[in-house]
Length: 417
Image 1 (cartoon, rainbow, N blue to C red):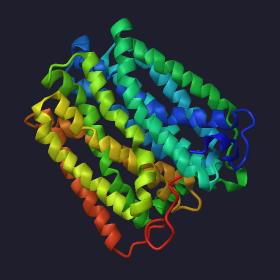
Image 2: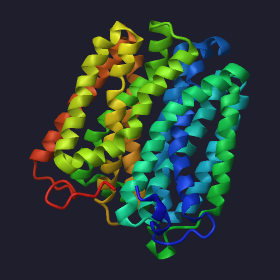
Image 3: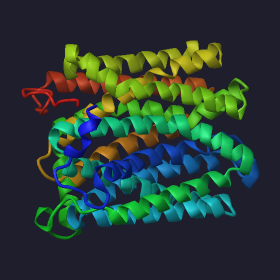
Image 4: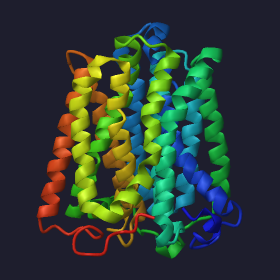
Protein backbone atom coordinates (compact mmCIF):
# COMPACT_ATOMS: atom_id res chain seq x y z
CA UNK A 1 0.00 0.00 0.00
CA UNK A 2 2.98 2.36 -0.19
CA UNK A 3 3.32 2.77 3.55
CA UNK A 4 7.04 3.81 3.44
CA UNK A 5 5.85 7.15 2.06
CA UNK A 6 2.85 7.48 4.35
CA UNK A 7 4.09 10.84 5.64
CA UNK A 8 3.30 12.35 2.24
CA UNK A 9 -0.34 11.31 2.38
CA UNK A 10 -1.65 14.32 4.34
CA UNK A 11 -2.90 17.56 2.82
CA UNK A 12 -1.71 19.44 5.93
CA UNK A 13 0.52 18.15 8.76
CA UNK A 14 -0.80 17.02 12.12
CA UNK A 15 1.97 18.47 14.27
CA UNK A 16 0.97 16.72 17.48
CA UNK A 17 -0.49 13.45 16.28
CA UNK A 18 1.55 13.28 13.07
CA UNK A 19 0.50 10.95 10.27
CA UNK A 20 0.82 7.77 12.30
CA UNK A 21 -1.14 9.17 15.23
CA UNK A 22 -3.95 10.39 12.97
CA UNK A 23 -4.19 7.00 11.27
CA UNK A 24 -4.24 5.34 14.70
CA UNK A 25 -7.11 7.61 15.79
CA UNK A 26 -9.02 6.80 12.61
CA UNK A 27 -8.27 3.13 13.16
CA UNK A 28 -9.83 3.30 16.63
CA UNK A 29 -12.91 5.02 15.18
CA UNK A 30 -13.31 2.04 12.85
CA UNK A 31 -12.16 -0.67 15.26
CA UNK A 32 -14.30 0.27 18.28
CA UNK A 33 -17.60 -0.65 16.65
CA UNK A 34 -16.86 -4.35 16.06
CA UNK A 35 -15.13 -4.46 19.46
CA UNK A 36 -18.24 -3.03 21.12
CA UNK A 37 -20.54 -5.42 19.28
CA UNK A 38 -18.58 -8.65 19.38
CA UNK A 39 -16.31 -8.71 22.43
CA UNK A 40 -19.06 -9.68 24.88
CA UNK A 41 -21.08 -11.92 22.51
CA UNK A 42 -19.62 -15.14 24.03
CA UNK A 43 -21.54 -14.22 27.20
CA UNK A 44 -24.81 -13.19 25.48
CA UNK A 45 -26.53 -16.62 25.72
CA UNK A 46 -26.02 -16.58 29.52
CA UNK A 47 -26.82 -12.93 30.27
CA UNK A 48 -30.58 -13.48 30.40
CA UNK A 49 -30.04 -15.75 33.40
CA UNK A 50 -27.55 -13.35 34.99
CA UNK A 51 -30.01 -10.44 34.85
CA UNK A 52 -33.12 -12.64 35.34
CA UNK A 53 -34.63 -11.36 32.10
CA UNK A 54 -35.59 -12.63 28.64
CA UNK A 55 -33.28 -13.31 25.66
CA UNK A 56 -35.10 -10.61 23.70
CA UNK A 57 -34.21 -8.05 26.37
CA UNK A 58 -30.58 -9.10 26.17
CA UNK A 59 -30.69 -8.81 22.38
CA UNK A 60 -31.69 -5.17 22.89
CA UNK A 61 -28.16 -4.58 24.15
CA UNK A 62 -26.99 -5.53 20.63
CA UNK A 63 -29.74 -4.02 18.49
CA UNK A 64 -30.09 -0.97 20.78
CA UNK A 65 -26.38 -0.26 20.45
CA UNK A 66 -26.57 -0.49 16.69
CA UNK A 67 -29.68 1.67 16.36
CA UNK A 68 -28.08 4.41 18.47
CA UNK A 69 -24.84 3.92 16.59
CA UNK A 70 -26.70 4.89 13.41
CA UNK A 71 -28.31 7.90 15.12
CA UNK A 72 -24.90 9.05 16.36
CA UNK A 73 -23.53 8.87 12.83
CA UNK A 74 -26.42 10.89 11.45
CA UNK A 75 -26.13 13.60 14.10
CA UNK A 76 -22.38 14.07 14.41
CA UNK A 77 -21.50 14.22 10.71
CA UNK A 78 -23.45 17.43 9.94
CA UNK A 79 -22.46 18.87 13.34
CA UNK A 80 -18.81 18.42 12.37
CA UNK A 81 -19.48 20.34 9.12
CA UNK A 82 -20.85 23.22 11.20
CA UNK A 83 -18.60 23.31 14.28
CA UNK A 84 -15.52 21.42 13.12
CA UNK A 85 -14.22 17.87 13.28
CA UNK A 86 -12.37 18.21 16.58
CA UNK A 87 -15.34 19.18 18.82
CA UNK A 88 -17.37 16.38 17.26
CA UNK A 89 -14.55 13.87 17.79
CA UNK A 90 -14.10 14.88 21.45
CA UNK A 91 -17.83 14.75 22.21
CA UNK A 92 -18.14 11.32 20.57
CA UNK A 93 -15.36 9.81 22.62
CA UNK A 94 -16.70 11.34 25.85
CA UNK A 95 -20.04 9.61 25.24
CA UNK A 96 -18.34 6.35 24.35
CA UNK A 97 -16.03 6.32 27.38
CA UNK A 98 -18.86 7.18 29.79
CA UNK A 99 -21.18 4.61 28.21
CA UNK A 100 -18.53 1.88 28.46
CA UNK A 101 -17.90 2.70 32.11
CA UNK A 102 -21.61 2.54 32.98
CA UNK A 103 -21.89 -0.79 31.11
CA UNK A 104 -19.15 -2.19 33.33
CA UNK A 105 -20.99 -1.03 36.46
CA UNK A 106 -24.61 -1.77 35.42
CA UNK A 107 -26.69 -3.26 38.27
CA UNK A 108 -29.69 -4.13 36.04
CA UNK A 109 -30.33 -4.97 32.42
CA UNK A 110 -32.28 -1.71 32.00
CA UNK A 111 -29.25 0.35 33.06
CA UNK A 112 -27.10 -1.81 30.79
CA UNK A 113 -29.34 -1.09 27.78
CA UNK A 114 -29.25 2.66 28.52
CA UNK A 115 -25.47 2.58 28.83
CA UNK A 116 -25.26 0.82 25.48
CA UNK A 117 -27.29 3.71 24.04
CA UNK A 118 -24.59 6.17 25.15
CA UNK A 119 -21.87 3.86 23.90
CA UNK A 120 -23.60 3.49 20.53
CA UNK A 121 -24.09 7.24 20.09
CA UNK A 122 -20.41 7.85 20.80
CA UNK A 123 -19.18 5.08 18.51
CA UNK A 124 -21.46 6.31 15.72
CA UNK A 125 -20.22 9.87 16.04
CA UNK A 126 -16.59 8.80 15.97
CA UNK A 127 -17.17 6.61 12.92
CA UNK A 128 -18.95 9.33 10.95
CA UNK A 129 -16.45 12.07 11.81
CA UNK A 130 -13.55 9.73 11.09
CA UNK A 131 -14.80 9.10 7.56
CA UNK A 132 -15.12 12.85 6.94
CA UNK A 133 -11.57 13.40 8.24
CA UNK A 134 -10.30 10.91 5.65
CA UNK A 135 -11.61 13.17 2.89
CA UNK A 136 -10.39 16.35 4.61
CA UNK A 137 -6.92 15.23 5.60
CA UNK A 138 -5.62 12.87 2.91
CA UNK A 139 -4.68 13.56 -0.69
CA UNK A 140 -7.17 12.05 -3.17
CA UNK A 141 -4.65 9.53 -4.49
CA UNK A 142 -4.27 7.95 -1.04
CA UNK A 143 -7.83 8.22 0.24
CA UNK A 144 -8.84 4.81 -1.08
CA UNK A 145 -5.86 3.19 0.64
CA UNK A 146 -6.77 4.75 3.99
CA UNK A 147 -10.38 3.59 3.62
CA UNK A 148 -9.05 0.14 2.77
CA UNK A 149 -6.92 0.09 5.93
CA UNK A 150 -9.95 1.15 7.98
CA UNK A 151 -12.00 -1.61 6.36
CA UNK A 152 -9.35 -4.20 7.21
CA UNK A 153 -9.52 -3.06 10.83
CA UNK A 154 -13.32 -3.15 10.70
CA UNK A 155 -13.01 -6.78 9.61
CA UNK A 156 -10.24 -7.69 12.06
CA UNK A 157 -12.42 -6.39 14.90
CA UNK A 158 -14.93 -9.28 14.66
CA UNK A 159 -11.97 -11.67 14.47
CA UNK A 160 -10.15 -10.35 17.52
CA UNK A 161 -13.13 -9.34 19.63
CA UNK A 162 -14.75 -12.76 20.30
CA UNK A 163 -11.37 -14.36 21.00
CA UNK A 164 -10.35 -11.53 23.28
CA UNK A 165 -13.81 -11.50 24.84
CA UNK A 166 -13.84 -15.24 25.46
CA UNK A 167 -10.49 -15.02 27.24
CA UNK A 168 -11.45 -12.01 29.34
CA UNK A 169 -14.91 -13.33 30.18
CA UNK A 170 -13.53 -16.75 31.06
CA UNK A 171 -11.01 -15.25 33.48
CA UNK A 172 -12.77 -12.19 34.88
CA UNK A 173 -16.46 -12.25 33.81
CA UNK A 174 -18.40 -10.26 31.23
CA UNK A 175 -18.03 -6.91 33.01
CA UNK A 176 -14.29 -6.99 32.45
CA UNK A 177 -14.83 -6.67 28.67
CA UNK A 178 -16.46 -3.28 29.25
CA UNK A 179 -13.63 -2.17 31.52
CA UNK A 180 -11.35 -2.82 28.55
CA UNK A 181 -13.63 -0.76 26.29
CA UNK A 182 -13.58 2.04 28.89
CA UNK A 183 -9.79 2.16 28.61
CA UNK A 184 -10.01 2.19 24.80
CA UNK A 185 -12.48 5.08 24.96
CA UNK A 186 -10.33 7.06 27.38
CA UNK A 187 -7.24 6.59 25.18
CA UNK A 188 -9.15 7.71 22.08
CA UNK A 189 -10.49 10.73 23.95
CA UNK A 190 -6.94 11.73 24.88
CA UNK A 191 -5.84 11.39 21.23
CA UNK A 192 -8.81 13.42 19.99
CA UNK A 193 -7.71 16.30 22.24
CA UNK A 194 -4.38 16.32 20.34
CA UNK A 195 -6.11 16.22 16.94
CA UNK A 196 -5.74 19.41 14.89
CA UNK A 197 -8.80 20.71 13.06
CA UNK A 198 -8.96 19.73 9.38
CA UNK A 199 -11.55 22.24 8.17
CA UNK A 200 -10.93 26.00 8.55
CA UNK A 201 -13.59 28.38 9.84
CA UNK A 202 -14.35 29.62 6.33
CA UNK A 203 -14.91 26.05 5.12
CA UNK A 204 -17.64 25.25 7.64
CA UNK A 205 -21.36 25.15 6.89
CA UNK A 206 -22.96 28.35 8.19
CA UNK A 207 -26.32 28.73 9.92
CA UNK A 208 -28.31 26.95 12.57
CA UNK A 209 -29.71 23.50 13.05
CA UNK A 210 -32.16 23.83 10.16
CA UNK A 211 -29.49 24.71 7.64
CA UNK A 212 -27.18 21.97 8.88
CA UNK A 213 -29.99 19.42 8.54
CA UNK A 214 -30.70 20.85 5.09
CA UNK A 215 -27.26 19.77 3.95
CA UNK A 216 -28.20 16.18 4.76
CA UNK A 217 -31.32 16.57 2.63
CA UNK A 218 -29.25 18.01 -0.22
CA UNK A 219 -26.92 15.01 -0.17
CA UNK A 220 -29.89 12.61 0.01
CA UNK A 221 -31.42 14.14 -3.14
CA UNK A 222 -28.58 12.73 -5.21
CA UNK A 223 -30.37 9.69 -6.66
CA UNK A 224 -27.24 7.91 -7.85
CA UNK A 225 -25.65 8.35 -4.42
CA UNK A 226 -28.64 6.88 -2.61
CA UNK A 227 -29.26 3.97 -4.98
CA UNK A 228 -25.61 2.93 -4.94
CA UNK A 229 -25.47 3.27 -1.16
CA UNK A 230 -28.59 1.20 -0.50
CA UNK A 231 -27.67 -1.47 -3.05
CA UNK A 232 -24.19 -2.06 -1.64
CA UNK A 233 -25.49 -1.87 1.94
CA UNK A 234 -27.44 -5.09 1.40
CA UNK A 235 -24.18 -6.83 2.33
CA UNK A 236 -24.24 -4.96 5.66
CA UNK A 237 -27.71 -6.32 6.42
CA UNK A 238 -26.64 -9.91 5.90
CA UNK A 239 -23.42 -9.51 7.89
CA UNK A 240 -25.16 -7.94 10.88
CA UNK A 241 -27.82 -10.67 10.84
CA UNK A 242 -24.95 -13.14 11.08
CA UNK A 243 -23.45 -11.21 14.01
CA UNK A 244 -26.81 -11.33 15.80
CA UNK A 245 -27.39 -15.10 15.50
CA UNK A 246 -23.91 -16.63 15.24
CA UNK A 247 -23.55 -17.36 18.96
CA UNK A 248 -26.98 -19.03 19.07
CA UNK A 249 -26.24 -21.17 16.01
CA UNK A 250 -22.75 -22.29 17.04
CA UNK A 251 -23.45 -22.74 20.76
CA UNK A 252 -27.18 -23.57 20.72
CA UNK A 253 -27.73 -25.48 17.47
CA UNK A 254 -24.32 -27.13 17.09
CA UNK A 255 -23.36 -27.32 20.79
CA UNK A 256 -19.95 -25.62 20.57
CA UNK A 257 -18.23 -24.13 23.60
CA UNK A 258 -17.53 -20.40 23.99
CA UNK A 259 -14.01 -20.96 22.68
CA UNK A 260 -15.29 -23.04 19.75
CA UNK A 261 -17.81 -20.36 18.83
CA UNK A 262 -15.15 -17.66 19.03
CA UNK A 263 -12.79 -19.59 16.73
CA UNK A 264 -15.49 -20.26 14.11
CA UNK A 265 -16.82 -16.71 14.24
CA UNK A 266 -13.32 -15.31 13.94
CA UNK A 267 -12.44 -17.61 11.04
CA UNK A 268 -15.48 -16.42 9.08
CA UNK A 269 -14.57 -12.80 9.67
CA UNK A 270 -10.82 -13.20 9.17
CA UNK A 271 -11.13 -14.07 5.50
CA UNK A 272 -12.54 -10.58 4.96
CA UNK A 273 -9.11 -9.09 5.66
CA UNK A 274 -8.15 -9.98 2.09
CA UNK A 275 -11.18 -8.10 0.70
CA UNK A 276 -9.61 -4.74 -0.27
CA UNK A 277 -6.57 -6.39 -1.86
CA UNK A 278 -8.84 -8.87 -3.65
CA UNK A 279 -10.83 -6.00 -5.13
CA UNK A 280 -7.67 -4.15 -6.16
CA UNK A 281 -6.45 -7.23 -8.05
CA UNK A 282 -9.71 -8.32 -9.70
CA UNK A 283 -11.08 -4.87 -10.54
CA UNK A 284 -8.15 -4.26 -12.91
CA UNK A 285 -9.77 -6.80 -15.22
CA UNK A 286 -13.45 -6.28 -14.43
CA UNK A 287 -14.09 -2.67 -13.40
CA UNK A 288 -16.55 -1.40 -10.78
CA UNK A 289 -19.74 -2.41 -12.59
CA UNK A 290 -18.93 -6.07 -13.14
CA UNK A 291 -17.24 -6.48 -9.77
CA UNK A 292 -20.21 -5.02 -7.88
CA UNK A 293 -22.62 -7.24 -9.80
CA UNK A 294 -20.55 -10.31 -9.01
CA UNK A 295 -20.18 -9.43 -5.32
CA UNK A 296 -23.93 -8.99 -4.83
CA UNK A 297 -24.69 -12.18 -6.80
CA UNK A 298 -22.25 -14.18 -4.66
CA UNK A 299 -23.91 -12.79 -1.53
CA UNK A 300 -27.25 -14.08 -2.84
CA UNK A 301 -25.74 -17.52 -3.38
CA UNK A 302 -24.38 -17.41 0.17
CA UNK A 303 -27.90 -17.00 1.51
CA UNK A 304 -28.97 -20.19 -0.24
CA UNK A 305 -25.95 -22.04 1.15
CA UNK A 306 -26.57 -20.84 4.71
CA UNK A 307 -30.16 -22.09 4.68
CA UNK A 308 -29.30 -25.46 3.11
CA UNK A 309 -25.70 -26.67 3.28
CA UNK A 310 -25.20 -24.74 6.52
CA UNK A 311 -27.43 -27.25 8.32
CA UNK A 312 -24.98 -30.10 7.78
CA UNK A 313 -22.78 -29.06 10.71
CA UNK A 314 -20.83 -26.23 12.25
CA UNK A 315 -17.99 -26.53 9.72
CA UNK A 316 -20.36 -26.30 6.73
CA UNK A 317 -22.08 -23.31 8.35
CA UNK A 318 -18.72 -21.65 9.03
CA UNK A 319 -17.60 -22.05 5.41
CA UNK A 320 -20.91 -20.76 4.03
CA UNK A 321 -20.79 -17.77 6.37
CA UNK A 322 -17.43 -16.64 4.95
CA UNK A 323 -18.82 -15.42 1.62
CA UNK A 324 -20.62 -12.29 2.78
CA UNK A 325 -17.76 -10.92 4.97
CA UNK A 326 -15.36 -11.24 2.02
CA UNK A 327 -17.74 -9.51 -0.38
CA UNK A 328 -18.52 -6.79 2.16
CA UNK A 329 -14.81 -6.18 2.72
CA UNK A 330 -14.23 -5.96 -1.03
CA UNK A 331 -17.07 -3.56 -1.75
CA UNK A 332 -17.08 -1.23 1.27
CA UNK A 333 -13.83 0.76 0.67
CA UNK A 334 -14.32 1.53 -3.02
CA UNK A 335 -18.04 2.15 -2.52
CA UNK A 336 -17.25 4.66 0.24
CA UNK A 337 -14.67 6.39 -1.96
CA UNK A 338 -17.13 6.64 -4.85
CA UNK A 339 -19.87 7.96 -2.55
CA UNK A 340 -17.62 10.62 -1.00
CA UNK A 341 -16.58 11.77 -4.47
CA UNK A 342 -20.20 12.54 -5.39
CA UNK A 343 -19.98 15.58 -3.04
CA UNK A 344 -17.54 18.42 -3.58
CA UNK A 345 -18.37 19.80 -0.12
CA UNK A 346 -20.46 18.52 2.80
CA UNK A 347 -18.06 15.69 3.58
CA UNK A 348 -19.48 15.41 7.10
CA UNK A 349 -23.07 15.22 5.87
CA UNK A 350 -22.13 12.71 3.18
CA UNK A 351 -20.23 10.60 5.71
CA UNK A 352 -23.15 10.80 8.12
CA UNK A 353 -25.63 9.69 5.49
CA UNK A 354 -23.38 6.86 4.30
CA UNK A 355 -22.91 5.62 7.84
CA UNK A 356 -26.55 6.19 8.82
CA UNK A 357 -28.01 4.26 5.89
CA UNK A 358 -25.56 1.42 6.40
CA UNK A 359 -26.34 1.45 10.09
CA UNK A 360 -30.13 1.41 9.63
CA UNK A 361 -29.87 -1.42 7.12
CA UNK A 362 -27.49 -3.25 9.46
CA UNK A 363 -29.95 -2.75 12.33
CA UNK A 364 -32.67 -4.37 10.24
CA UNK A 365 -30.31 -7.28 9.81
CA UNK A 366 -29.92 -7.61 13.57
CA UNK A 367 -33.67 -7.32 14.18
CA UNK A 368 -34.74 -9.71 11.39
CA UNK A 369 -33.77 -12.88 13.32
CA UNK A 370 -36.14 -11.83 16.13
CA UNK A 371 -39.13 -12.52 13.86
CA UNK A 372 -40.94 -15.85 14.42
CA UNK A 373 -38.69 -18.01 12.23
CA UNK A 374 -38.63 -21.82 12.53
CA UNK A 375 -34.94 -21.59 13.52
CA UNK A 376 -31.94 -19.27 13.33
CA UNK A 377 -30.47 -20.96 10.24
CA UNK A 378 -33.67 -20.29 8.31
CA UNK A 379 -33.72 -16.73 9.62
CA UNK A 380 -30.17 -16.03 8.48
CA UNK A 381 -30.46 -17.75 5.11
CA UNK A 382 -33.75 -16.14 4.08
CA UNK A 383 -32.71 -12.72 5.40
CA UNK A 384 -29.53 -12.89 3.31
CA UNK A 385 -31.35 -14.03 0.17
CA UNK A 386 -33.99 -11.29 0.40
CA UNK A 387 -31.45 -8.57 1.19
CA UNK A 388 -29.03 -9.47 -1.60
CA UNK A 389 -31.81 -9.99 -4.17
CA UNK A 390 -33.09 -6.48 -3.38
CA UNK A 391 -29.57 -5.03 -3.51
CA UNK A 392 -28.82 -6.68 -6.83
CA UNK A 393 -32.12 -5.42 -8.29
CA UNK A 394 -31.37 -1.83 -7.22
CA UNK A 395 -27.85 -2.04 -8.63
CA UNK A 396 -29.10 -3.30 -12.02
CA UNK A 397 -31.72 -0.54 -12.04
CA UNK A 398 -29.05 2.08 -11.40
CA UNK A 399 -26.67 0.77 -14.05
CA UNK A 400 -29.38 0.60 -16.72
CA UNK A 401 -30.86 3.99 -15.89
CA UNK A 402 -29.73 7.45 -16.91
CA UNK A 403 -29.06 8.41 -13.31
CA UNK A 404 -25.48 9.75 -13.05
CA UNK A 405 -22.89 8.30 -10.68
CA UNK A 406 -19.39 9.77 -10.94
CA UNK A 407 -16.72 7.10 -10.99
CA UNK A 408 -19.11 4.46 -12.32
CA UNK A 409 -21.16 5.92 -15.17
CA UNK A 410 -19.80 8.36 -17.71
CA UNK A 411 -16.60 9.37 -15.89
CA UNK A 412 -13.25 7.87 -15.06
CA UNK A 413 -13.52 5.34 -12.23
CA UNK A 414 -12.34 6.24 -8.76
CA UNK A 415 -8.93 4.71 -8.06
CA UNK A 416 -9.24 1.94 -5.45
CA UNK A 417 -5.81 2.71 -3.98
